[in-house]
Length: 263
Length: 89
Ligand SMILES: Nc1ncnc2c1ncn2[C@@H]1O[C@H](COP(=O)(O)OP(=O)(O)OP(=O)(O)O)[C@@H](O)[C@H]1O
Ligand SMILES: [Mg+2]
Image (cartoon, rainbow over all chains, first blue to last red; front, side, top):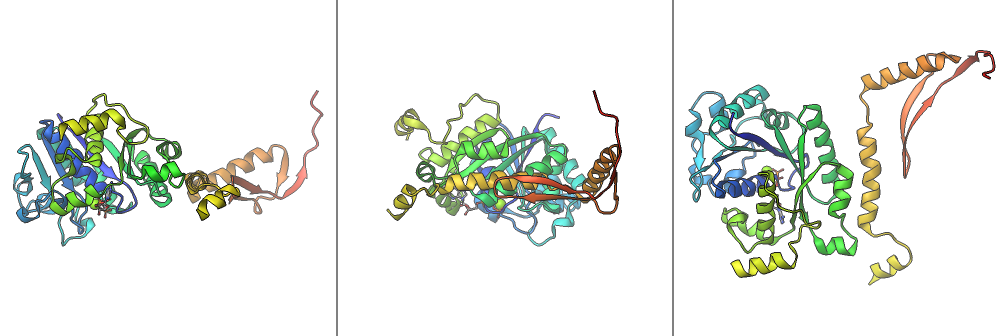
């Protein structure tokens, strides 16, 4: 097996899993790796609109699994990057249309061809979660700095460990540095201390995320965006590159200078 | 402004409150043992205690108690009789 399967999960809904998959996937593809993104959120398809590929869907994940089409027929190529594909979720099916064993087989097949297989996990801890994690060797747990998201993240980490998935990394999304400074938001250190899994990175709260979703163009194509830069750095660390973790997710003066000069 | 005044009078910042609360909640969630494990734990406690005293098997209870700043494992056991032992020298 050449590639690696990575599931992005959270427990709580709406914390940024789909945004994370789209941006990490796009960054890795920009680094010339071959990447396929699987939307495992059956019944609540979203990754296609975030990637701006909603008009091209013919077949979906369940069609592959049920043998209604070949794998290649359900893979949609990105508009900008020729080495980036998505496999959309079925919109009108139930989560139990897929079994964990089938996902395992599919991931194994995809890993023969691709460097990275990224799975967008549905919210919750039921069947959809079990399917999404079945074929993965690495899990990225996304949380926001809020009590309910952190509690659910802790629960999910427990379930991943119980499923013998021990390569777990934390992503903190929507951190508001101003609120942390005022003492009205838990800091990165607080959250890492509570959840006790290694931190992969911190993404600031940013309006750019909404704008990029509106357009269907992942944030990392936009060099001027702080949140976009955060996702790029996260993808680089996931790829084993040595990118230092700055403690609050901000870039610091030199980062800002560099961005100023680049853009 | 109002917030600054309340802080002045000793109100903790909400981020710190959240962290403290989560410490307790997560600990409680993590030790939220399954009924099977609870049963095994009960039997083990019984076995240990029985070496020293006669226990009323039916009355033993093991519960998790959540206090404001701690989580405790509380076991309530009715003792029927304590064995007389030779004093350890
Ligand atoms: N860093 C951020 N700053 C601002 N808004 C954000 C950020 N990250 C995500 N969002 C917004 O939060 C919403 C939820 O994001 P997303 O769809 O990625 O979450 P999800 O975990 O995939 O949700 P679901 O559980 O429903 O699948 C979106 O509207 C997105 O634009
Ligand atoms: Mg989603």
